[in-house]
Image (cartoon, rainbow, N blue to C red):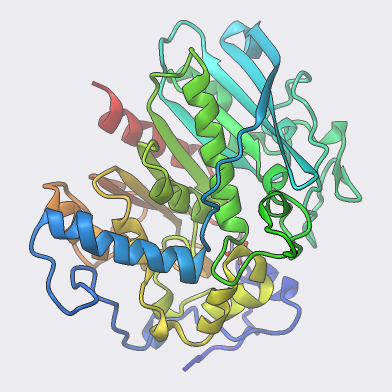
Length: 428
Ligand code: GTR
């Protein structure tokens, strides 16, 4: 089935090859994509067609959601765990006097374990209930800006092979890590456009390696358990759960209680952003930036990263049940167009980058296109046809999409689209 072995000479894919423990087999040639059949979005498990919005909302949506919960990302705990929340910082003069900065410590305790999640917000001064972006970060809150008042994370920080890892020593962040992700968080533009930003470090919620004795999971184990059940949450569900806790903070904060909420995430956190939008209806808009395999991209295309590769490298991201779909995508009762459809009728944006073939731009687009019939049930516009739009020609319907020139990352161009898309849908 796979036609291309990872001996790729293409500069853009070379780094991928070098980080894989063993050469993996994957295809990045469109002409080699085998025909595939997607599971039907609007057909109930009993074979009947979805005829109405009520059929979708009361039946089909639940069937699909259950599969994503049990077979893919894993079920989140039913039990609510209330944190103690401490406001640790409030400044009215942040970012050259343009923003209010706030920081909170959320402390969760259970089973004799304790977890602290730090939340950071910048809000534009003089704007009442600004729309707020919730964007999880990869290297600690201190990495989003070189503001010396941001608390440096105490949590484990991922170190990339073949990357400088500036300011991270032995998996701990140091002073030198301040602002190292600021290109991904253009706060001057975000605040300048009247938006607020909430961010949280994903490693505070669950450190990103295959170990379930740390992070949030152990706080929810039942007696005798030391890892999640086979249908229970992996790391992506845990990170999405963490975003719902940030939304609790947004709702408790008088400055943002009435704000509209846009979740945006990049790459593995783009997968997380989509999933959080599905499980939390308080999210008004979900945006996935270069989310790829098990984010927006259709798995059955087996283009770029495959289910087998993702399960081999990152088994902890999903429920254990998901492991059986390695090389067996066709057995999965869902594909990622169904994840997008679960956001309906709320606006959802899928962003791809031309050189990011590992994430399968066409597969990301097609998931939005094949989700469109559900948006149409609500009288909303999805994506117009099966062909990829031209590079740098964004589509801003209720489903948004762009294929940006360049590679894997978040750029100012991406942010311009997200802010325009959010304004279009959320401004009254
Ligand atoms: C890659 C992974 C992708 C994507 C990316 C990232 O190694 O294969 O699924 O999530 O990491 O998060 O940067």
